[in-house]
Amino acid sequence: MTDLLIIGGGAAGLSAAVTAKSLGDSVLVLERMDRVGKKILATGNGRCNLMNSGSYRYPDGFAFAQRVLTHAGPDMQRKFWHSLGLFLREEEAGRVYPATLQASTVLDVLRFPLEKDILTGVDVKDIRRKGEVWEADDGHRVYRARRILMAGGGCAQEKLGSNGSCIRILRKMGYPCSPLRPALTQIETDTKPIKGLEGIRVKATVTALAGGRPVHAESGEVLFTSYGLSGVCVMQCARYVDEQDASISLNFIDALGLDEQGMQKELNMRIARLASAPAERLLTGILPPRVGQAVLNSAKIRAVHLENLSEDMIHRIVRTMADFRVNVRQLKGFESAQVTRGGISTEVFSDCTMESKRDHGLYAAGELLDVDGDCGGFNLMFAFASGILAGKNGRTAPWEVEG
Image 1 (cartoon, helix red, strand yellow):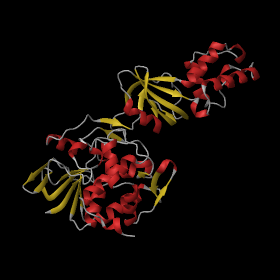
Image 2 (cartoon, one colour):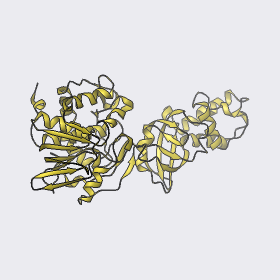
Image 3 (spheres, helix red, strand yellow):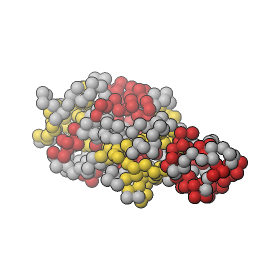
Image 4 (cartoon, rainbow, N blue to C red):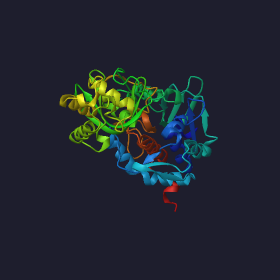
């Protein structure tokens, strides 16, 4: 019999296990993959952006995430990591990383205290309560505990461990679940307007449109790919894309610190100075050459010299720079997504302990809940926070009062 049985050896599960063990509980982590923490190793391009000290950014589940982080926010998490010997460093926009800038360091400090408390290759199919005892069944063996934590993640990147199994178990038990969709993922678009741009990065304001109307905008670096668009700002717009009648607008002028009027003035000055030059030189030094050519193509500017550009042509060029439009085909799927949008309703769980309000001794934490954040460490921060609270179970951990 174990005090706390944890299904899922990711960020939420491991932080819960370490916390509960620090309070004297016996713990057992059951992980479906051949090792724990694979998704941790992939975060932040291998650097592990484990939290953010800035304003909270949770497009879905904000109120619940905020309450959870009131109980286990950045200050508490810093104490948690310090107790494990992990030094941190903060970079731009409040992003916090391990001082080593290696995700493997984060995983090491989590798994080392649990070397005898982890079983890998265990795929739990069902859980049930018998009296005051919870049981988890993998089809071969039954594991028993006084408390059980569901921390198996969402559906994003199954190759790293998340296949939605814990969500399916909880749904079968009658727990409400909002629709599951990939979030923070790349967008597949019509490739004709961006042909030849693969691998080029450019600063822009990215606006997601539905039926031609803007629904969300982000600024940052856009990466052109063979299938469409990527980059943090694109991925943060993905959740707002309705694939039925969606398009993406790229504004290249914003990143230059100009408005359309200022850009038109700049182009007129260039035309006056370089009148006999071919039109394709007009945007040299403003945009990468191939991007500039794509803008001219979309503006339907054919092979002419600058002196032959009409006012209407110049206006079309400026408008295209401010609204380079590509139609959306579909979002990249769960295999590419960083996080799952949707999940088990948070209304059924306590924001103080993560315990179910329906079933005593049943807890849930991390990505399987209907909370998801933007890039920048917000998703890992919620996973660690909810895991810590589940492990504490209303108690005060030793590292909260030390120092």
